[in-house]
Image (cartoon, helix red, strand yellow):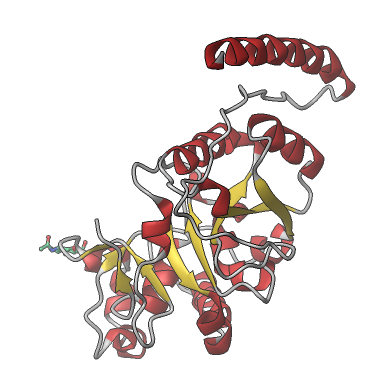
Length: 282
Ligand SMILES: *[C@@H]1O[C@H](CO)[C@@H](O)[C@H](O)[C@H]1NC(C)=O
């Protein structure tokens, strides 16, 4: 009966696909992607019961990702991989950040078609604010303002949220999200991320940076290592209390005036947090 049910659902989906395709000419410029409906994933009996009051719930696992048309396929794959490997998939709440000018209705439609039971919210991100801060030095692929949304998460997400796992849209999870979300942050770390202490940390910053003590001394007293900002467990309350968004933005403003680093959104995170983060188990 299970297979039969699935077969029936696939037929239904094909029908929806056709209707979606015929509806598409309404918007001539957008190429709407349609994804197959994922199976429903259920909590195992030992999962804590969560009571959602809006999107705030301390027992739930909160995941934040960006949504945009170019990477929608990646986001859908990431969401599926999260649900597939979770023992309590119904306890995961998704927070999506999308450009304020994007078609949120289309995103909402696409996500809820693919994952009918998903609990999620889409938050508008005013990319104009960051556009003026993006240094012209960086490669155009990293120039996408949505790349910088991670800087502003504590302002974009509801104030009541304590902890969130931020994920880039180009990854696939192969283990339980709850384990990642439970990464210990210790007494004072603002975030946890995968650290790579064998990477050549020097190479992320320019000779201009390393020849100016008022700049490079920012790392004094820290064992600064490269870390990946594509996977971060963030304590939003500690972030807000320390006003780390302002600190990141200050480095971006400096980068606009003098070239101190090579890449886009990553180096300001290294400048502010490297050496003070909690490690994520590789
Ligand atoms: C690290 O990178 C810097 C700058 O790119 C280079 O000068 C240095 O030789 C590198 N160190 C190692 C150990 O590769």
